[in-house]
Amino acid sequence: MSCGLVLVSHSPEIAEGTAGLVRQMAGEVEVVAVGGDAEGSFGTDPERIQSAIENLDTDEILVFMDLGSAVLSAETVLEMLDPALRERVHLVDAPFVEGAFAAGVSASAGSGAEECVEAAMEARTEPKLHEG
Image (cartoon, rainbow, N blue to C red):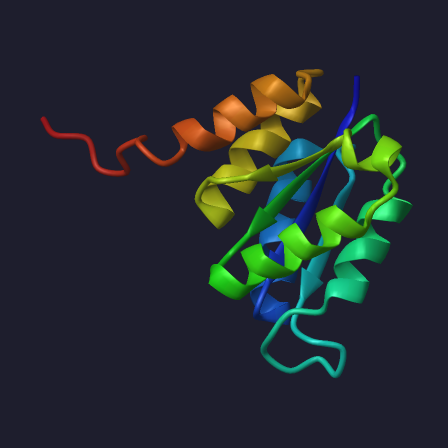
């Protein structure tokens, strides 16, 4: 079962940069960056989020959001989706960059949505500095 990622950020650069990082390490995993509002400024655009979700050709779709109103936009879009598609979409409560990276790598290894979400959520507690 394939997983694709939709990265929703207020910043076009953050969305694209994170997508580039995930693609670099995850290879064939479908990743769509949805950064900024409709004019390319800071913000979010529910129409672009919906289009990204609807156009992903994967079995499951993981949506990562950076800040509060990105979450609100994604939740709004989720409610507007066709019920059959909505069942395949998972809003992921995980760190944006580290979570998307972990989920992408997990998806590239053939993991399903549940395992990818677990990997993303583990990124929240994974230490960056190792004592010793």
